[in-house]
Every structure is written in C-alpha cells, then in structure tokens.
Image (tube, rainbow, N blue to C red; front, side, top):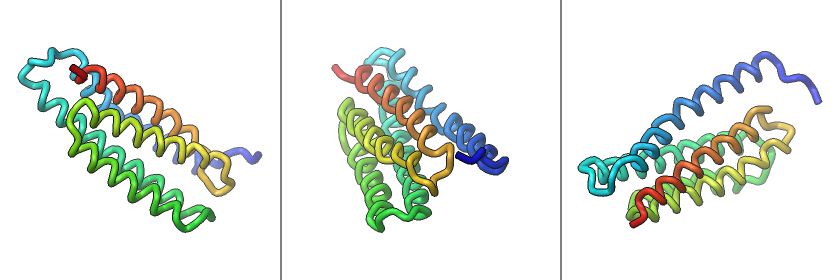
Length: 153
C-alpha cells in the first residue's frame, strides 16, 4: 500500500481535531448528567441539551457519511440511506422521552459507525476515514449508554 501523502496526513489530523472538538460537548454533558442528582434543577435542561446535541451530531455524521458516499463508486442509494436515515433517527430521538432517546441515538450512531467502518476497505476512501469513524462511534455510543443509565429511573 502506498504511503499517505502529506495532504492526506493533514486531512487526517484535521479530522481528528474536528472529532475532538465535536465530541467534547457530548462527553461533558454526559458526565454532567451522570454526576448530578435526578432532582437537580438543571437535570431536565441537561437531558434536553444532550438529546439535541446528540441528534445534531448524528445528522452531521450522516452528512459526512453522505459526502463520502457521493465520492465513492458505490451504489447510488448509499448516500440516501446514510443521509436521510440519520436525520429521521435524530428527529425521532428529539421526540422520544429520556432515557429511550439516548438508546435510539446510540443505535443510530452504532449503525452509522458500522456502515462507515466498511469505508476502510474501499480504494477511494481517505485513509483516516474508517478508523476515525470507528473510534468516534465507540466514544459516542459509550457516552450515550452512560446517559441512558443516568436518566433511567
């Protein structure tokens, strides 16, 4: 296999930085909701913020997956699946009460992560895409499972 070019390495570094910046609020909100008591005045607002942020992050991840799919030589329905379904799951999560909203988001992220993990086997995918998405999926799903546990009564 060819050595990645400097541009690919720079793109990989940028993707890792973007992932860290995007995951930080999710992790902070998850730790906060896990740390505060269920009767804390900010508990409901934190639950709503975490659900909304998780839904937006899922939609963004679906958009990234869609952009990657549009670049690939795969079937034409792949961008529709990754783009439209993530929006539908994100919207459904916003409309679903806690703790089930976090289970729905975790399922959506796990499915999208599994879908994107196959990108590493494509010749036209960036070298950093599949592994980075797998790592981010594990972090997000773990955080959402923790949020589910924290909000389950």
